[in-house]
Length: 319
Length: 319
Image (cartoon, rainbow over all chains, first blue to last red; front, side):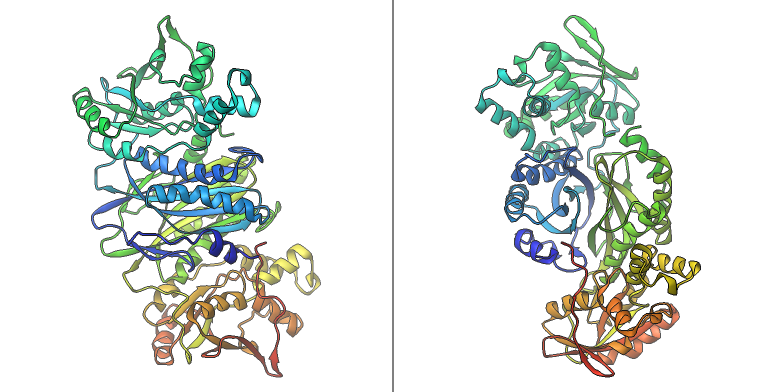
């Protein structure tokens, strides 16, 4: 078994795209960017021991490795197109590779992407994904455009990924959830659907956007820093699943604010654009929640029905 | 110390390029491809324990991580432009990061590239580089165009990288080389200069090209497979340094054929184009050696002055 056999067997599915001049199998892929568009590019890594464990399903690892990069493309309002995969494997396990490849290609197919190249090496299990997409020139979302008075929205629910970590890895509150509910939580953690459609819909309407990977407080904090503004977030407005609401209120809020692994979008939008945004998003049946407002005074303030609250941990710490 | 501090401190040098709309610091970089060109993209990884050891200098790791990807761009005749860096670190060591960053940026600066994004995560030391470059449409080098009668050339010397591994890691033949000669070998191993200029010069002249990373025999084998042809290589024509020639002839030839880690280009060229190629390459003072010829009969045949020889190992095995 060598690198080239593995690529041919697991990572060479043909694509329907017509912008690929050369794909897997030469020193580089050759790709034709659409005329007049800019490229959006991102890279992420999942590392065994940090982002998943030896018991994580290989299908889920393959799915999520690509989902986290697509979520970055979504946060810019981009249209994802081409993918490179860097795979470091301790050994060649064909059952693992088959399931991993199926998970990876499930999102490739879902978004009409193409895996055009990458690298396989021997080493501790690590998956690096690099995704490229397109944006119309000067029409993309950044972290830097939030203005005082803008409303703050998030897509979907927050905290289920963090809840899943607690329940499934640490067995906290495990008695609160049936086996099928634990399966639902695992799904939230391992199979997040990147908000690619929503991100594209927001271009021209939202003033700033980010995807929630490190936790709402930390990621919204990046938007505030980049925009030079502050915000108040209303804890009671945070969208939470019925499963997360079973936890004591403070614990649930903490997961929703700080746990990360949500892969929802957080965006800011001028009040004049809200009606148009809601109308556009209605057709895609996206769940949207207004959770607060941008203010000129820097810093992130958290307000519950009982008054201001303090946050003791700002988000996922990488080191 | 968090991921964002590390990026700001070590990986945010400004660039002179004018095709970068957004660089490090948002969910994605935003880049403007040159009108009418195609993109060439590649990704490679260096893993501690597989590609370097705990004693390898961090400057060298940073340099080589980028050099190997640039070598892929060179093999396609591309002009490298944008770089993403995926770094998995067991811990934050500022001295290490400073030296690593200097090695990485030395090639960024040398080729007028820009580091536009990437990822830092906690985990076993692994460096993933992704490089994008440009080629004129339908004017790039592939592995697939070699024709019977074409001559086979290589740039530079072969086998010094493999000799360095043997001498420095395994202490084989170490008594044959002084300390300063061992430094020269280390330099060949850790600081290969990617043949970017040579690759671009060969576009329109060479019929096929590849960079030599797994060893001449293996990499030329890829060209032969992709082109549906065979070849004879004359062992006595393989370009070797005076240091490598100190080894017994068979051992030296084996390193030149199979050790890999050369990052020279191997290319095939129709006889009608040889004079023009030599003329163009003379101005760039590139060392070029004709080592054999493409034939219709498939397979790679090795010929020494004493007759045919067999090769017992075809190149670097990834697993």
